[in-house]
Image 1 (cartoon, helix red, strand yellow):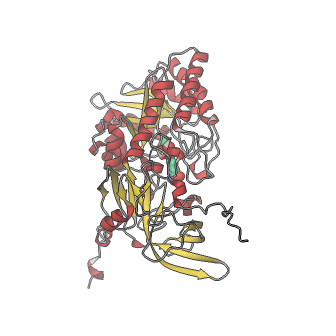
Image 2 (cartoon, protein in one colour; image 1 turned 90 degrees about the vertical axis):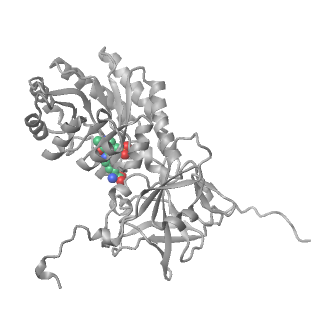
Image 3 (cartoon, rainbow, N blue to C red; image 1 turned 90 degrees about the horizontal axis):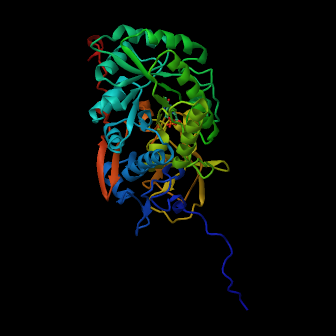
Length: 463
Ligand code: LLP
């Protein structure tokens, strides 16, 4: 007799495994945008738009930004501060993660302030309609011109070092005063890639603690510089909560020292840094859990020091926008090195996502047109650039794919477009924002002609 016992084999995984269960979860704990679904044709849909249709209309590579995920992350930060902080609070978007008009406009609509680090980011925030007193200008080597731009705009300037402080004092006047914060190096270490640690003492950013008393003394004699706060940022892609718990008492300590010099300090900015889930191995705390720890420790540190609560500021970047965006690529050539590996190449790579080659960052990939197909293949997903290290993912799990198929890399919202380059004279991709089944172009695709815009051919070389 033939037995008909059903197979005990577990179902092979498919790209569906990355879908978020609902819209209420913490975006930084999800690999795909919150609105990602699989439609009747087994295609990936984001913001109600079929990714294959988006690609048809806008081409690849394409950054696809899910508005609802970004807005949800903004709201979760703000609501958590309302819940856990009894004083005034301000959430800022660290726009270095992705600075463009549309993203700044969404963040500001959600009530967030914007952190900028260059004249270019400042101008973009202003053009996006951000009010100057909601712009904080960071950076360890702002130029004369940038400082001047900051003063003229009337934004807050986060002063990083003596050189900048002295320069700034020559630029301000009765008619053009500046409101500033001081960045300090808190001496707190955290576990993340060494390139993105910033709070330890050996860091290029901020005043060392042993410089601060002299800085406070100097500032007390500057009539046109009003120092309203202190700032620190300890690093990025951090999963631990302890560093931010420790930071509160360091900052309260220096706030009190500054006040003893008569400085009107009312703001403490604890930076950003909350990590996100790029793969199943990543387990960051939720936005709410992070805010809760930040608030509770600030309240406790103020109680211990017996001082009033400051306006508490934080400035996340990655955890606001990282999981809100995916990048769609078209599969092109494939090469199998027998017994070693199969390379599957896509039409982008290190120029639109420099994170794998820079930080050895690991990503996931999905077959956007075959969401339920079992992930039977292990391949090296390669970029198109003339560089062996241009690999998007080592050992990527995919169904069988062929030339023309569309693959999607999730969690590309942070530090992808903003760090994109034209290496090999590859034009930078377009970006669309999706919502309610509508897609809107927010960044046009560069053209090859654009790439020559700043080239000049000296006459003697012309034909
Ligand atoms: N505030 C300051 C002063 C910062 O320097 C940064 C990030 C942030 C806030 C935002 O940190 P987040 O919440 O995004 O972790 N390119 C690297 C990340 C560099 C982070 C630079 N500073 C990467 O792709 O991982």
